[in-house]
Length: 386
Image (cartoon, rainbow, N blue to C red; front, side):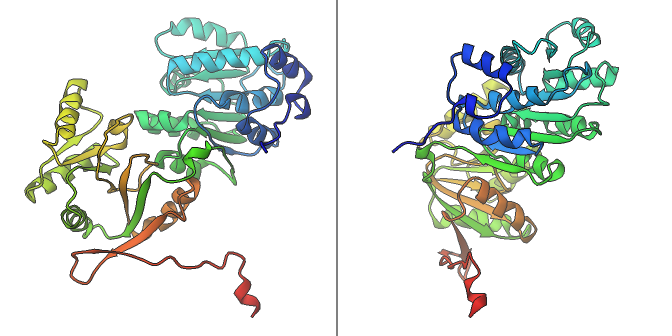
């Protein structure tokens, strides 16, 4: 028996928004909308995980519109998007939801459009802006955006935006929003950067997770290895050698780390190359062709550079630094230090891999990996009563 879908009219949404939504042909809420809208209306921070095309824009756009003070023409809500296309699309959807809320104005601000035209629109009074981080920062530097009354902030497609290199810009923007009351993030995956922003700026965020059924079972054998900075390189080399892996992807967090690690592996006589965001598309294509052809055995890459890569027959994915979610087949190894234990636990919990990721360690001679036995956890603390 399938889940009973909640109708929009049963959700306590403003009647004017309901009227607009019905005209758009929507009757039932999607799972992400059903879970996120009530929490957003309460004023809580939200971290919502759902795939593209599941109605995320309505999940934050509808409650944001409802919480706007229509009599106040000042800026009250901000939505940051990774690209101008997404910003334009989200702004258009919000305008459709607000069709019968005649005092609400929504403006898209993005690069590539005349900034003076945007400044003129801002002077007329705008309650919600939907923009790209670069153009929003430009307006903030020019003081054409007033932040005194900005209460609600949303990062849309947060993983994509932060992995595109906007991490510092997003932090810079949030740091200046002194009147902010809520920060919500909606993302297809929970990446390391998304977690970092959550830890730094969110308070008791409600986690809303909607995943397709087929993604609940892992496609890869997952292992985690507790190591130290000193032992990392030796551990990496020994895993590749002992398992006789022929095609391995190793992920690092920064361009500097990829170059350094590739050089270290080359000195150990591994056939290796590296991939990072500063390479031209032609260089990226050449390296990927060599990797697919088996001319390179170990490819060291940043998460950003490897985004969207589809490489079949990869023997193993090794996360040299604490990673974002991976969906490649084969084996996945996560290297972490004692200081990163909490981050790793949170990452595995949010990506629903806690029970599937097995701890491993090397044997006494540092030659073979030993898979540790799972420990039975007393979740309800029953033993304390005996």
